[in-house]
Image (cartoon, rainbow, N blue to C red; front, side, top):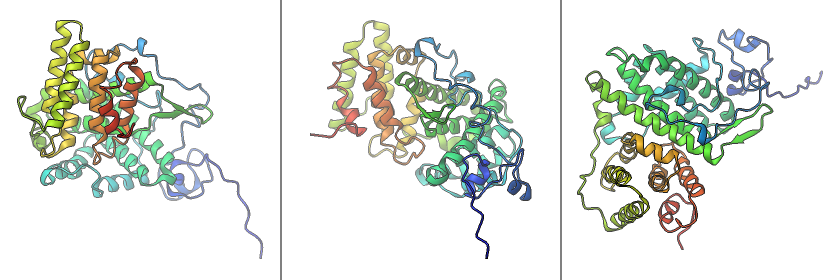
Length: 391
């Protein structure tokens, strides 16, 4: 009996075969298996088209102007510059991703399941009418699937990036033309883009396959980009409220009264932060701006008895002003401190899988940017983020 012919393993098979853990004969433009199954065939474009060029490191912070509008689409975070996509073609694996999205309850639990209908029934219905939302759903589903399947995570993450990039490309013209026919889908994609941006790894491969980790400045810019996305959600809601009322459960947040009495420990934390921020502030205009941001911080603080804590934490970011964004960009200590405390709250959102360890990343980024002398006020966020242990 003849022995089986040995074969050499290759990392250059198509993404569909990699995701299914089967051998690919690497025929172009479509491999034999995909041709036989009558499905589209995609190859890893990082090792192909992008491999001939040098890695594109993130621009320096000093060269990046703050976006004039929260929906300056050119500032949407993308882990790979100008990634080419094969728009208009969907594969059998994409159908698998849509099934995964519709059947797996991977969104955070909400009071009485009030958002389940919106995200698992209404969103797919809207997606079949608006391709930008369809690609967004496939991207977040792929990232969730990759999280639970480490063996195929690199390939599935690449598919997620392709869908993410396509969603952004299709969304560009929509942003300036929101109307009753697309307002619901636009809002849904804006929310998914935030989740996708949090979920994407803070690294990208270079031309020879080495992983490039973001620098501290690049990480800060990535965080700013996500905050811009969150601010953009509010812009869409403000401009299309009459057309998005069927999404009302998403906006039902029980915020704190500005004069609410907090538990002693939490009150002490917020008082210490406010006193330190005021001590650092140099002008009355800045003091007013920071006072307003801290007042909003109190209103959206996730007290223990408040339901839907992750909604409160994320909602605070939609209230961030242009001046506060500019202060973060300029690495002002007052703004960075508030950002670190926000990171601590994000870190505790264990039901938001897409946030992952990004709360801790925010705290560490602020720690790296602050000069000496802030060890005392940074102790609380570092403790909550697991960067130090309680002595």
